[in-house]
Picture 1: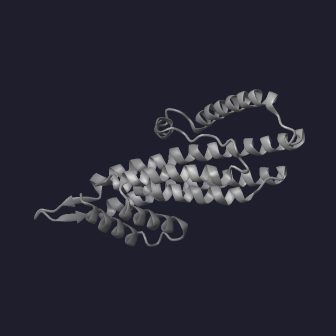
Picture 2: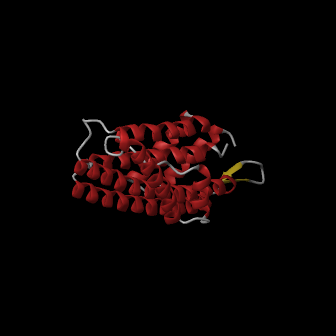
Picture 3: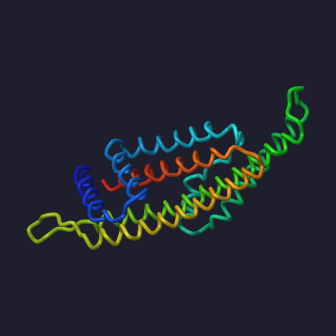
Length: 237
């Protein structure tokens, strides 16, 4: 299936799904635009660069930001072989051990300009709550967006068929079913992410941290979603 035909099908999909308005629809339109502009490698590279840019943007509040899940770990979550909680616990333990080693190494090299113990302890708490909530975000993204990838793969074979005279026919009922399933999954993921960000904001307020990071993470999530969708679309070629 060539790129032009995929674009036409996608546009048709969103015409018949025009009742689904708001952020969901805007995010899908953004994904189509990105799909039309970039190859799957360019989209993949952009996702990596965006994650690095996110780390730079929030390092003032989280200088020791937790790592993202590897593709293998994401697949384990998406397949249900490992739960989100199990993977979050795994990477948080890794981060905790690494941070402890850094503290021990730096204990003998403190300068006279170092922060007070209370300031350092509060900064560590802020970094810890950010890491915990970001890890949960990574987990929900891996699970729900991984499910969207499976839907895209199934849609590749079910979106169109050939008529008796050899013409391509768009299967409206099948497409509608895929749209409804995808919308439901995305809605569940959005609800989980919103709950995580709400919890993070509350904890940051209590610790006197910078709550602007919440909007930064929310925007990063929306960008990640549209790029993931664009990537899955590129695989339909």
